[in-house]
Length: 409
Length: 150
Image (cartoon, rainbow over all chains, first blue to last red; front, side):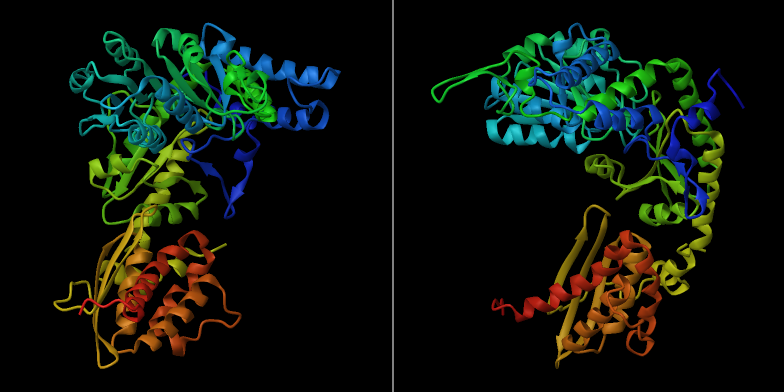
């Protein structure tokens, strides 16, 4: 069954949870779009940090604080290489993609967005790339515009071009749709935006786990990364921003670590990245994220992607054999994410029933209610695959789905 | 291990497939809407209170089998009952699905509603089973409120 040099059995041994059981059945974890599992290297790095490396960063003159700071800043360099950013200072630590988008909407918004301006998002965005912009629109008097998509779940680039107007101040679009799997043509979209002098933010929550990233090649102005979706800990993520933007933007939060000097009359701010990192950060999370980047650096990403694409095709074919099943999201360029509905059966019933076979899938609207509305469904079931999933697990899912039919007679 | 057939009892599957009282009333005296947006479960409930009892009741909605079957079985159970009796059934039902009562569900009180006893083994689904009942409670409470449109 091997279509590449990808040794999935060996990779699975790196992820302890994959050997566990649920309801007495081997765990079949197909909810990677929500969060990925963690390799032992990440778990051990976090544990080791708390056991022998813990101190606050940027503060102490003692050895332990210096080594914690070195680990914290060293991970910034790793992430710069991971994203192929130009400079370390373009990497801002945040809690996750949600905070990253909120940071830009708040800070860049305050700098650039005024009444009568336009903010452009797409029809397939996660709520976290809609709501912060709505808040900005309400506060500033700007208008939120939406790039439409077709029935396959692909953005309509002709309409996108028309929606880029002299009033557009920023474009915010997902790299990969979390509910449809669509991979958006970011490089083309960035070029179109830049031709009109408009910066573009890319929500990379689903991009980083699947694709080899190069923010310079994409030429995006901002790129957001969620640590826990790329095999790292929860509560840590990245905002990449071009230095010219980050330098011009006002602080997002005030506090310690983000200042140069404070008096009651006047505070001057630290240069980037510290300007956007107020307060003691999630140091252990950064260490864990660094271990995740190291882990990814040690695997053949191209082979991993081929394996995921093989799973996508195999699962799409196999799911097609389930009576009454319709796949929602049929873009030509897709990541290993499959949303589907079963005729006459609500997604939550599907999720509860397949769980009894050890299968973990997401059911609901996936924080993309506008997408659900567009396709006229209340909810979907979603299987999202990582490079450690197998064709055998697809078979378990398909068998469990056939069991759903049996329950409903 | 929780058993699926305990959750998806034949009664539940059957009421989901062919819900009872699935209609709008001509002249409701009370109504309320139940909405679990995270699940996508919706219930629009209408009833006509006459002579101190629920003379007519109907609902429309969409959602998972548990939520829709619960609404169907509820309408059948409270038809002809007084609001006090209906609220009593709500409490018994609630205790059954949350496991809140020490005593096991009393089939004499709950009748067909006992089909939902298995829900307590599926904590994520309790809110699906309860939606219709909370909606009924809201509809009945509107009467007690000191606001009248008559």
